[in-house]
Image (tube, rainbow, N blue to C red; front, side, top):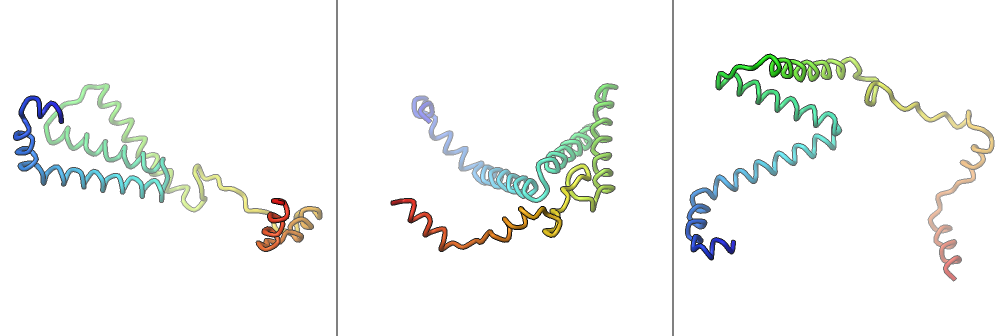
Length: 145
């Protein structure tokens, strides 16, 4: 900001904003929309799935760029591309097989035991427990004196 004033280049900046303003706003909005999609993906599917989607997007862009511009890959580059594509495909195949088992890796938490299988002292504690907000207020009022 100050350098524009010192170098007397404010008019160049204003002209650039007038010429490119729409593109700058479109770039900002598309970036914001991308961040919303990332947030929703993490919230609904988890960070691991979001990172796999990001990897798939990058690999797709890379392969398209190689094809479109006619680049040639070295042996090490080809091996790296095959490893990344193969691991992504194997991960998708693994998720399809584990569907319905719940949780990551097919391990889910066991359901809580029924109350009739609990020890007697635990059953007594659970039956004695009452969620009464009025009695809690009375207790708090009594301890504040």
